Length: 230
Length: 406
Image (cartoon, helix red, strand yellow):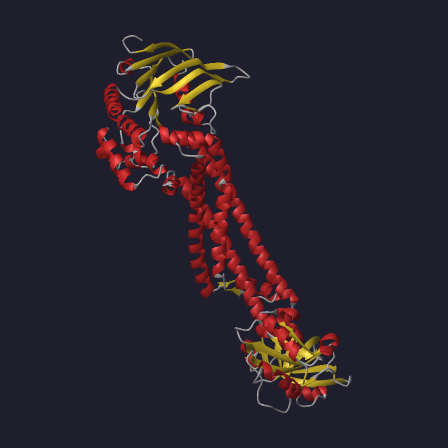
């Protein structure tokens, strides 16, 4: 089942001065439960593409349909609510809330959704344990290593059981061991929870873990398929 | 959760937050202390005027007030009859004979107001007896009539205790009379203006000088009970008096006193407004810096699904926490300072003459009503709310994708 469909998607920055075609007519789709890597050189439009399907930016042209609903026409407030209920984000720089513990960071989205405290506690500890940072639950981000922070960030993204997770270069700041561990955990959660995970990378080790590769260059998809065929 | 997050955010940069809180604390406590100082000064001033000179209410013949001629007096017996209905409201009262005249010594002449008082009854209404520096508040009747004059007038007339002072004035028939009085007491109040213009004599002796009969007076000074609202009582009293009698409250007798009290209240609010305005700009500046520093975090929170309302609420709460913390500490600090100096007083002895020239005491006891603290806290709350407008606007207008890349 296709959960994300893009049609003739375009994003042009500075259209009136020096136009930059960051995304240039992408039409593609993503199936439920996919573990997809968007790859390509720096500046090829990976982040912009992820931002567009995450509703963080509005396309210049084209349409994005998520779960059968066009998000291109949604209002800002509707889009915020849509993200809260359906999308989890993982960022390159972890972006945990520094004044909150690992537990509170993961619980944050569930509290925004007014979930019962008992449910929050069970879910947060389940995720932190699954990500191997259960013993760090009450530590603040600055007390964790980069790899541990990113695992907490993935747990946060999964907390509300979103339909899919968008991860922008989640391993870019991690060493090879931490990268390996994180990807294995993400794969495990993808299989266990059935969450669609789309992430961008230009790291060859990461690409090899993906079930599907979408190669981009100059804002366009140039190859699309399984890692051995793409 | 947003409230907890906002509170923790306040303490992310402890030095910066403490600087804002300390600035607010000092501003608020300073403004409150000055307001208390002014209130204490005004309160004492009004109290002094009432206790030394005016009393709460005075009754005269209406023509006496208009023409200031001593031939317009009333009969005590008549007035007492009219006052029986007001026995509950009237705590103390003293009858006086009042006239203007010239006080002369061998060296100088001064225009004065003579008040003929009952030495037993007058101290229950006014407090001149407390200000006697030399001598006594009248003595047993003697050969020569007695007078109390102020230290200031004694210096001007170059007289001392037991000196003679001749008073020249018109009697009730309009004839000029002169009478010698012996200085039996010298007083000094906190008002230089009052001191140089008022002398006190015994009303029975003064009545003879003015050719008035016993039971005839010009003025009745009344002190009401503390629970009595003076202006309302004056209206009620006036309605119960004969048409030729006039009851005036201290506010009517000295409107400038009430007006000055009002000016000082206005000054307090202006001072507070200046402090709050400075506070607004300080907080806006700090919070705009906070938004700038946390741009990426704001982008992250909004991408996770924190809507504009909650982002706004977070910054509003941070701003209010900052300002209210300072206000509460400032309130506590000023409360203790005001209470301490309210008991000990602040001594301005080196400026005593200047204070006395305005009828003020050189020792000020700061005083502030509790509701002023509450009001100031509320004002600081709304100031914080107002100051949060620009930071909130900046935070919710951030482009999410740009903010995340920050």
